[in-house]
Amino acid sequence: MTTATALPPSSEPIIAFAGAIATRLIPHPHRAFAFEVTFLHSLWPPALLSQKPPLHFHPYQEEYMEVLEGRLCVEVEGVKRELGPSDGEICVKPWANHRLYPPRDFAASPTVRFLLSGQETREMFRLDTVFFLNWYGYQDEVVLGGKGFDLVQIMCMFDAGGSYLSFPWWVPFGRSLARAVGILVGRWIGGLLGYQPFYRKWTDDWELACQKMETSVFQRRFADRAKVE
Image 1 (tube, rainbow, N blue to C red):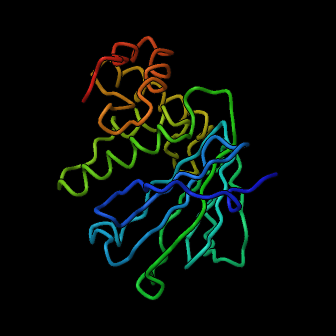
Image 2 (cartoon, rainbow, N blue to C red; image 1 turned 120 degrees about the vertical axis):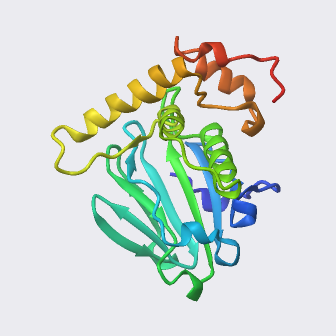
């Protein structure tokens, strides 16, 4: 399989958290998306240094990570690994609970650069560039604006990205239940309450975003192609 490493990144990065995260799109012929992501300790928001992102899973896609510089923590099913350039590409299987974040001693290796990509799928609600642009945009607005995260908005965006928040390990049928709750709250209830999975201000391909939202009776009213903001 062709890897993203051999292909040049786009010239304009997607910037989040005032430059703490820079993401460059890498063209890839066999994957739904491919990014080169850089974490910079010098710009990292203090509020996030002691926090881990939520555990989650993707039912429809494998996700791939490869560290190019520094160290990256990856948790999969409760097992934490600290990856470096010598570890090569790793694959997170569909339905596996996972998360990734900078290491505890981030300051000792202040630049983390890695490749992140995902498997192709016919699902409309999937991990792709439209999802990541909106997810980064929302996080940026919340953290830099000093606002609080809205769980319904998170679940709405995650569902549109084929992603679901993990339940504790002891919950029976946890993954199936988490997916069902993600669709119920994020797509159905969220849509009725006016929560959008994609916003024009954060989306580079609004036509594709509209096509995605039109697949749901609860979200198709947000698919306004004339919208400029």
